[in-house]
Image 1 (cartoon, helix red, strand yellow):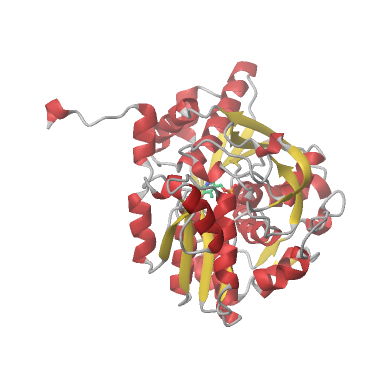
Image 2: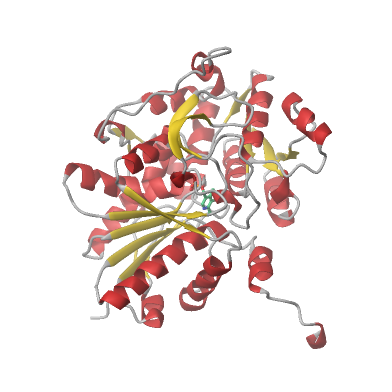
Amino acid sequence: MKESREFILKADDLPNKWYNIIPDLPEPLPPPKDPPEGYSRVDDLPNMLIHECLKQEMSDQRWIPIPEGIRELYLAAGRPRPLFRAKNLEEKLGTPAKLFYKSEFFSPTGSHKVNTALAQAYYAKQEGFERLTTETGAGQWGNALAYAASLNDLDCTIFWVRAVYRWKEQRLKFMQMYGADVYASPSKKTEFGKKLYKENPNHNGSLGIAISEGLEEAKKDPKAVYCLGSVLNHVMVHQSIIGLETKTQMELAGTYPDIVISCLGGGSNFGGIAIPFMHDVLKKKTEIKFIASQSKAAPNLQGEYKYDFADHAEMTPMLKMYSLGHQVTMVPIRGDGLRYHGCSPILSLLRHHGYIDTVAYPEDEKYVFERAREFVQAEGFLPAPESAYSIACAIDEAIKCKEENEEKVVLFNVSGHGFMDVDGYAEILGLKKQPERA
Ligand SMILES: *Cc1c(COP(=O)(O)O)cnc(C)c1O
């Protein structure tokens, strides 16, 4: 019989619990901390986050039931998502490795971010909030939250890193289709934004700045609550749905990964696919090599493991994480979702204990986008620029397997689609309109 290329779960197979790795970590997770001076950000947390999310943030419960209402939303968003065997790519590369990829690109707004956006919007609605505020970098998180707000009958205010706001016009219109209110950040809407805007109206912005604006905006309005799309523990919990589905699908495929790869900005899609497998490594002593693929523009896993703020204006508590410094400036890249100064505390701790390897690709993105082009031409799906980093790393590993004639099983996550990012690819790869053909 021909080997299957696609591994599909039915609605009934949709997990009914998320996995929380906190109780299984090799040491207790260092808690959020206050800076030596100023007011207590830790005491302020209940005013900052959705109550249920804060509860999950601190939870040491290993399995967290997914409310039926959120399972319905996941089904409506097209979960469970298929796992594919990249047979064409394997053949093209001539590698003995077996390549599998998870299709988070099959998403209403284009990325895995909907997995936590739907949960957060659902809880916010239950707790009586009427409006969500947030930041976005690449635009995928803002778009996912705009969608989730709309399905849960909530308003949504988004602060979008200006450097990206300027060029992703279609993404902006997509957010507006859901009824979201979108500002380029730094904006004139908040006190913090105004200050930076006055200094430089063309300020490129950063995720750290946009987070500060989202927090300030929510603080002004008791009916509004702030949502964060990555980094935090409760986001890792929600994203575990990716890896939980994938584990069942690898069983269907009759195999198990030697290597698990994904791109990493704040860590939510990497954590999503990796953490349920990390459970096996920690508890059942299976051996898996985990590789987080990053950009040299923001190689936060090569930074320092220390307490740092999650935002530019120092409104958040300090988190123990790998960080490049919360006020560092980073060059813009097309895979903008990878441009964040810090990595999730959970993943940082696992890296600190040697469980996660990392690679960082050059800022010009040529190498990475060439690998994405190979993937497109073999497999047909157009990845998000961020997901191209996952693909590049998987191809590199597949080529190593070829050189060493090793039949490893390589699992990678494709976190989003690139339907709104073709201009970025075109620019880097030099695709042009050819006037003589018009
Ligand atoms: C946001 C985003 C990322 C990076 O964020 P993580 O939290 O590290 O996953 C990667 N890929 C896509 C498609 C994204 O939207």
